[in-house]
Image (cartoon, rainbow, N blue to C red; front, side, top):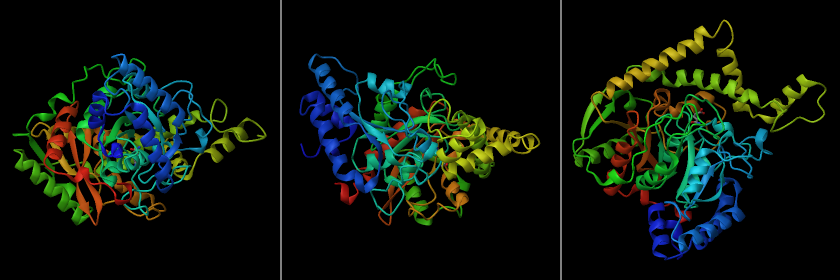
Amino acid sequence: MMDLHTRTLTELAAGLEKGEFTSVELTNALLDRIARHNDKLNAFVTVTTDEALAAAARADTARASGSGGVLNGLPIIHKDIFCTRGIKTSCGSKMLDNFISPYDATVVENLANAGAVVLGKSNMDEFAMGSSNETSYFGPVRNPWDLERSPGGSSGGSSASVAARFAPAATGTDTGGSIRQPAALTGTVGIKPTYGRVSRYGMIAFASSLDQAGVITRSAEDAALMLGVMAGFDERDSTSIDEPVPDYVAGLGESIEGLRVGIVRQHFDAGLDAECGARVKESIAVLESLGATTVEVDLPNIDMSVPTYYVVAPAECSSNLSRYDGVRFGYRAENPEDLLDLYCRSRGEGFGDEVKRRIMTGTYVLSAGYYDAYYLKAQQVRQLIANDFKEAFANVDVIAGPTAPTPAFKLGDKVDDPITMYLNDIYTIGANLAGLPAISVPCGFVNELPVGLHLVGTHFAESTLLRCAHQYQQHTDHHKACPEDFQ
Ligand code: GLN
């Protein structure tokens, strides 16, 4: 059973079902792998060894008595942005380094109810603000494909863990690309569902109108299995949508014959690395060989998506992060002189540079005299971008393009240049602004570094995206490649 880490979630589910191994054996095997290899990657804030083994034992008992959910005994990892009862939830920040949540996020609860075993909490950019994992208070995560490079961000601990075979699935969150960009940079699958599809309750807020939970796996089939458990209406989240959750796994086998794939001209312009563009075009040709047809589509306002996002997201973040005041929870400065000093020093000492930059930008764009010029204008442009997508989806079923402009970049390369860093999300941010579901699928390599194909669908078209990705993976094997040091 030396090969357990190489199996997908679906394969592991079948192995457990057949009694080939127990959840305790599987959990031990992966915890052992994490203990041996995590020093190279720094993918975890917390490894929950004892809790995982206890949950695995419970899962084995449930199975023996003929009960247990669809993920019974299967190991997963949670991004450290999801509140976990009794376990530290840091959100990658010094501010929450001492925070033990008194409750579980709905995503955590849903997965636990299905029997999943949580191996730990993954490292991430501070408050999910970043594209490289370098803003984490706990230090950067390294990319298993090249330890000098970033695994992407902000869900970099999750993407690196799945790529390194620490677990077959890890949760993530995506405000502007934080599931899909790290998935692309690590050769994994990452899906961000429609806004409102998965509950945000207990998911620490960054920009509430953009944040959405999703998952990183190695196959679209596994993503379908996970999403089916995570999704659903939650009365504790006022933006959760009361739509039945389809069986995402059931439709995967259907052919994509006749699927209309939109290609956005602007996505293949100068900003895209030529070799990445070539891999993406090859993958679109594969879709065509499977019966899909391509149609050129126009998103005339898409060039405005990055500047629009960098007004809306900081504005919402400045409001959301006002709750960290050193009084109720989180970091508190020592020996404050008075209340104002307590606020100022707790925030000054507890937040890192990128978070401060966002709070300052957000406070500025919301301030009297600038609100109309920046925030209101950004909201108007956001609507135009959403309208562009709506028009495009009148003629196509999915829009295909690159997930990120380049393969994984070196740690340190972009960290001092926020604009260059922000441009990493140029292809992913539109889906967040419009609330659309999107997936990144491994589609080849450039200089031995993975590249991702990005597919966007209309609202609630997760099934179409997963089916398209699954059919693509049935005819390609990029997702089976494993980084050399992590075989
Ligand atoms: N990289 C983007 C940012 O820094 C998106 C982050 C995210 O999706 N959480 O805001």
